[in-house]
Length: 276
Image (tube, rainbow, N blue to C red; front, side, top):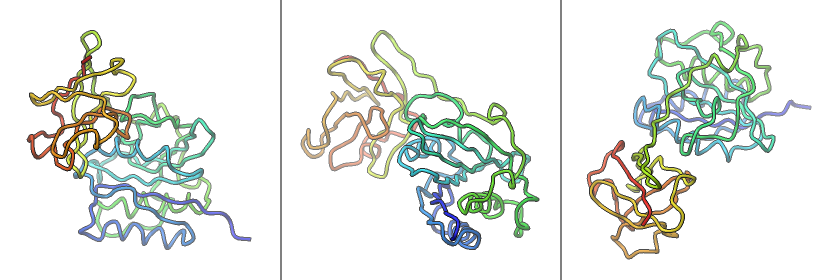
């Protein structure tokens, strides 16, 4: 009887115009040919650790038991930063493996946080990957997705013991990233636009548990948008709408339009939510 394999999920800032993602998938196919490989996201802005944290946190609750995540957003490639494996568990008992650089990308597994940076899954154990435990490196020193992360993730997916990949370390030794602070005056909370999706919708970091009771209004870039709306159809085409989005935070959009482009709003723009 063949040993069970786990599904493997890839996230990176590699994009799809080059062969990088395809090579990682090829490495996995060679080491764990029976593991299903799924792409979470590869079009992150280059070296965007904050965006990667947000998108990874959004995906984690929906992964099946035993899933392996290989997340590669790695400004420190070629330096002495470590590659790590984290074993985590969701509150409902589902297990999770995460393979990533030790640069704060897995912060959501290492501490309590707020939406959209948070995950209910918590790290239980961790390992530092020993490059010598993997296959010989390919040419160059800048493609650890191929040489470290994909091989380690594939071996976990096929059922290898994590102890064969490197030395176990305390989870408290791993790197975490700072979360931007919210400010408030009474029931009004001020955060920022932290993500803009492909529709031009403005995703904030003001979470549901900070919202005033009843009606509220969002102020961003000199505009005021009342909320919460039940969805886009609550307003006429071309009108602004504010609502609680799928990441658990306040979002603002233009129905059938692109709010970010129409209003020239970049990520980082201040956004304030106050009682209506």
